Length: 160
Image (cartoon, rainbow, N blue to C red):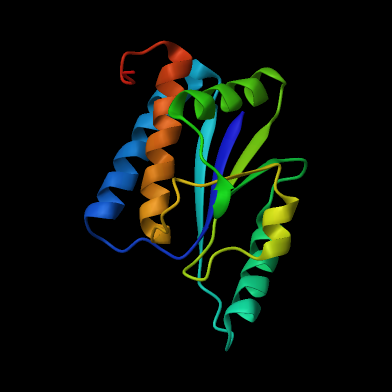
């Protein structure tokens, strides 16, 4: 299964970019052993519309155009369900075992994701009840994907 992250906004040079690159590298190295063939991260510019609703709508169009055919879409949104790391890993494992080819995580920009895009997702998850900057969410997502990979491999990275 291929993992894709489609995100609005770009990481600037600095600690978050370095941390994201480190987790992406770890996933790329360990993923194939866990049946996760590749990781692709695509960044898109924030829309320049005059209001939040229009920006989110335009960003949704960009994301929808970039989706692989027949992919499983997971939206990261503050209205989503919080999952434990084990449950997150288990869900990825189920999709992998069901023969899914593309798993796409979507991260919105500063305004969040378009409501219709969130509704179209197979699953919507949140990293707790707090609102997080979209750049930090990317790092948190990459860490959780790496953690899921190690759980699927039985590696001791995760401790209960």
